Every structure is written in C-alpha cells, then in structure tokens.
Image 1 (cartoon, rainbow, N blue to C red):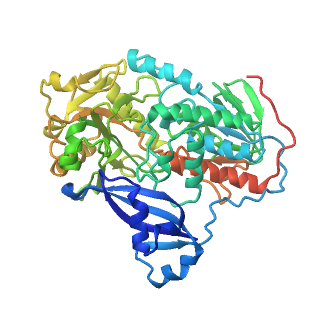
Image 2: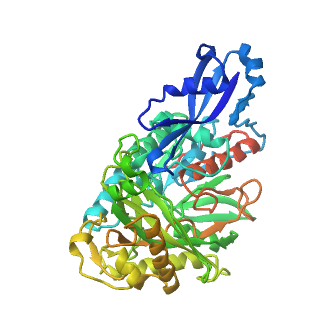
Length: 544
C-alpha cells in the first residue's frame, strides 16, 4: 500500500532522512511499518527570506495492516496511490509499413521518437543535418572563439538540437505520464537521479552532450541507424502522400512514414513545406535581449542571509510585466544561473544570442532573456512565414549594429532605459558573450514599441530585484529564437494536414516549448505510428 504525503518542510541545513519520520508522524504510524519510501518532489520555498525551507512530497510503501488506522485519521495533503499505471499501454497496429520510419532531426523530439520506435523493433533511420555532438562542440567553440560560423554545425544544428547548448532545463507545465518516461531514459543515459523529484531540474550543457550521445548509441544497439551531415533539402509528395525525401540536394530516399522533428531554427524547412502545400500558420512568439548580472546580486535578492549556502546553489528568478496601452507582455525567459550568454546564430550575417550554463552553474554571472510578445500586429498573419522574416530582420539589424563578424551589441540596462550610451568599458568588459562585444544602443535593432515595453519592464523588474535595471545589468542583443514562429498543422493522428505519412513533431512544429515537452511530443508521434502499423518488411540502407 502506497501513500503520498505532501508539504513536508525541513530547513535548508537539515537532512532529508528526517522526512520519513515526519511523514510517519503525520500518518500516525510507527516508522517500522514502512517497507520503503522515496522522495517524489522537492521544491524550495524562499518567499520569507528568514525562513527559507525545502518542501517535499514523499511516497511511503506501508504494510497493509496500517490501512484502517490511516483511514481513520487521514491527514490533509495526503493521498492513496491506487494502482497507478505509468506504462504507455501501446498495442501494435496491423497497418502495412513498407519501410522503416524515417526521423528527421536529433533534437529531443526526434531523438525520443526514434528511441521509442527502436525499442519496439521498428529500426528507425535518424537523419541529422549537423554533426555528432562532439564534432559539433568543436565547431561551436570555433565560432565563439573566432567568429567563424558553420551554417550546418552550430548552436542550433547538430546532434541534440539547440537544447544541447543551453542550461538543460527539464521543467515543464504539461501533465503527461510520458514525462516520467523521458526522465527515466535521461537517467539511464547518465543524468543524475535527482531530476526525478527536483522542482526545477537541470542538466547543464556538459552533461547533456554525453547523455545525447548515449541515447544515440542505444538507438543503434536496438537496430536503428543514425546518419549525420544528411540535410533534407526537399520532399517528394505524390497524390497527397510523402514518397521520398531528398538528402543533400542529390540523394533520393524512399519513405512511407516520416517524423519531421526539425527545430524552430530550420527556416529552410518551413520554406520547403510551404512550397509543397503543407498547411502552416504564423504564430506569436517573443523577442528581446539577454541580461546579465553578478550571480551574488541575484542570490542575495532571492535568498537574503542564506545567499551562498551550498545546498541552495545559484538562485534563479521569473519576472513578468504587462503594458496595457500596447497590450503586450514582457517577461524573463530561459534563466541561466551561473551561466553565459552565447552566440546562437545559424545564418550568415544574422546575429542571435542565447543562454547556456554548465551543471555546476559556477560562472559567477546570471543571465536570462528579457523578451516582449510579438504577433499579429507586428507581421502579416496571412503569410505563415512572415514571423520568420520578422526574426531575420531583427537579427540582420543586430549584426550590423555590432559591426559584423558576429560581434554582439551590448548596453547597460540603465542606458537602455534612458535611451543613451555612456562610456562604461569596465562594466561592459564583464559581458560573457564571445567572440567580442561592442557598445551600442540596442533600441536601434528592435522595433520602437518593443523597445518601449522592454524599457518599462526593466524599470518594473528593478523594483522586484534591486539593481536589475541599473548599470549592474548588461544587455546583449538579440534574443529571437524563443519559440517557433510557425505552426505546422496536423490531424488527430499527428500527420500534417493534407500530406499522408508526414508527422510534424516537437518545438519546431509548434507543439512544444522545451526539452521535456518536445521529447513527450516525439514519443506521442512515434506511439501513433506503432499503434497503427506493424513492423516494416524491409530496411533500406543509405550509402552515406
């Protein structure tokens, strides 16, 4: 018999071993009646700086003899776990599948779709336009050190997708039993077990690289095939169904079921889909800048006298602001405690930035995106690709403002608010972006209304975290890749509307917003294929 007991509070210097006895006291049972117990969730309550505490939910496996006693005085915030079924309950379909499923893209969605297909014996073929994660790492380092961008091997493209060079956040708001499956696969591939119960788990780019490679190795061990530097450049559609894809503009590869899991930066794919008649819609997203502060400043604001306690780690934040005149939201996004601002460009003479951190979050600098919502009044929704062009224009303007060679324009938050530029070389030298930065007015690469709302938001955030909107904050431009600017419409079987056999998935298709939700969507799509089709009769092999 399993009982879930919630809202168990302990001090930040107290040991988690206390949780078992606290839970037993709540249930009014002796500790000896507990056969096993484990932590299901851990969160931090820092609302009252002098009373910071960890808050836990635990599960106790209790002897059946205690059932009547517990039911007689069942405590609040507790519940029985009655035969919860966490498996996916997949039943293999009987439809005819001529070829092994093709998966395009090795981000979380594509990787987990291929993993599930491989587990069920479908021997998927996984195509990635970029390089394997360790070769990709060298290309990214060369870009950051020298400003030499490889258009197909960068922060956006390559094994693991854009999330590989990020903080590796595993937070998600979706409620889906596939989430626990995703977390377990990550653990089996080398992630720490704590991600199962932490409220805000993260992996860091250093751990993600090894984990991604290990999942790829498992796919191959199960009969799958992974091919790098295999860029899909076109689709062959006949009678409303996909028949083949063109790889690297020269190889035609026949397919019957194709999962399209390219990320939100694969802009060429959006263009090809529009050409072949896929149903696309423009969608809202957000644009803005990255802001950096000394990590100790954020720690003190969030933790007070407890700042620096090793159990707390580097503090994060989430801030929001609403401008009623323009009807726009501004908010912090993808906060990276103890991290770096990094170049995330993927096209020539266009500048985009992102945030990244390692698992230990020890850089001494915090950063997050501060972005403003954009949508129908900023670009023409009648053209599904107009949001993408809006992104590109801002990135072009930022590239010019930095003076070229992927040098990023930077400015203090105080100067941005006041629409001025002051000579502050000693402060701006602390910007973590590489290969270099140049002081400039970031309002010159953002639409006027966006800049106005952003300036107001910085002033509002300064009231919530002292120093946020002063010269303690360094802004780096520009952040444009917050989410997909396009949604690829699909039916209830996850197929693209009007194109049989093509399955758009993940963040690039407009159905996810982070590592976990993208992975879950990839599993969902793969599950649909398994439940509708039997294993393929033949396995085609490409001579790469």
